[in-house]
Length: 184
Image (cartoon, rainbow, N blue to C red; front, side):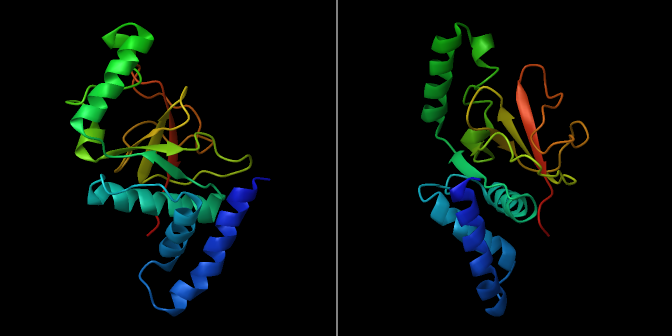
């Protein structure tokens, strides 16, 4: 078993009654965000818009409590220049703009530059985890260690049998979609 995952879950479980007794709003989310903040101390959600931050916190709280999945942020909101640099690197790596667009979008088209997309880890959930209905969809490019999150109701295929199973996303985007219902 993953010691870091178990420690994160244990810390959140320790913090939960404290937040509940203090009468804090959404104590399970607060406890999980506190524990995940200790697990991933260099995460920076500041570049994300409010809706993306709230959806991400709710989805990863549910992933932690219901499935034992620890989701971390690899990157979120990016400047136009940073997104352009990533796109240019992908063009160099894959040989053409059309091939690069399967992995990275140009800044004018990327939701990262609007603070409405984020890259997450891990791509795969622990064995034995169960999916739930979806209100927030996280999608991850399959060949990378992170993924892109598109917040809001999912309009793609029904929830896969596994929370991070490949789904029929856009043919131009080779994505694996991880679905979790936002905690209410």
